Image (cartoon, rainbow, N blue to C red; front, side, top):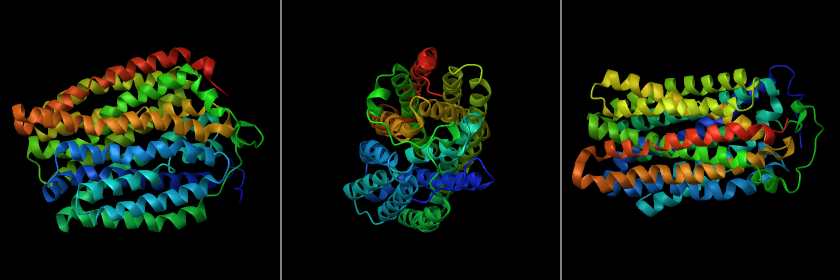
Length: 419
């Protein structure tokens, strides 16, 4: 396969990072667009909150988690750039097909197809970044890559809402899906395969056998993965249901809430992701445990902010209160992903990332959106349109669980760390 120039030379690695961020932006745009369209889809197809929660979480997470590890195993042995190109084309194509769905099961299956494609979109990218950037810059590079989460989520909210308001929800799926299909060949032309382990001073090596067993024997892996999963139950769940909350509890129209929530997600998310990566690199040199203490502190601060934000009745106050925890909710990405990369040798990083994503997304994404939808349905007879507000309150305790698990991981990470 074609090899890139030495990844530390010139500005090429930043061009690669920009394409990786763009691909990740489409990843989350296609993943999160369902949230802003949920109200229109619910009305058009006659769905319940529980059904919407299943489509937003389980439908996507089933194949996303199941295929992630075998695809990452392949990525540790074959071209990561080809795998990502194919993945981008597949998930974008299925996003476009969502616009043709005529009922719950058709849309459910299309969302499963999005998950099939996105299974190959993230773990290989983590590995590529680790081979393009030196250790001292890696948490920041991974944090920059993670800008795709708030930017993609914000664009999904913004474009989805505006297109649906101008045309309909079906057109929103088709337009953003086809845009991703067009990006795939450009991605393949620009992003070349780097030498594995080059930035760690190690020679190229084949992926080690027994890598999965090595990773699963490390207690820090399980504490990190379960800690991230607990936070993701709340993070993914709240992100999916906030558009519906703004509609039901604050009376906001489709365009208004698209602009409102899109701005919160973009500005709060980008600041939080970069701040977490910056703190991780700055404090990580003092001790490996700081890579996990940074997100633990962020989640403990996010909990009361979200609590007061959900109770706010003034839109300007709600904007500020939601902006802060939106950033804190994403501060874990750079430090934690960097820590996972250092639990195994360089030749096994895609597999390690996929194992982490398997646990995080199966629990966090698979349970999160369904949990809030199911609790909302259960509370509707008592609270009516305000049921979703109380459903969100009930899920904030997952942040405490996450913080405790990350603190425990910080205590043992040093002995599991691989330089």
